[in-house]
Image (tube, rainbow, N blue to C red; front, side, top):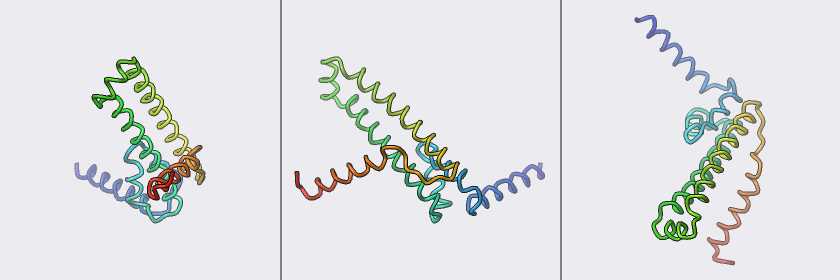
Length: 148
């Protein structure tokens, strides 16, 4: 019994040592693309490393984008007035479910692509991310300044 506990403690200590060191940069950065919490786990241990920080930021943007899309779908599906109007024109369950399924597929696909790039130790942005980020910055700038 005590030998198993000792092995477990050794395993945990070795895992923490690897997480805090510079070893396995691609494998560790790939963990950041695990949906919802992977980026946070890696941020705790390797936020000061340039390569890991790049993929942490990519994964965070991916998660925030998915949550924003899913919040809109939830709002369209659950908000009483909008849901009622969309149900009258027979759009609500079809469109919201379609958007939900497509967003899940895209989210998991982008996560897999980002994890693959990280595993291969590449610092390449995910497709369409840069364009979407620039457009969102323009929109928020217009909102802040109040110009059309």
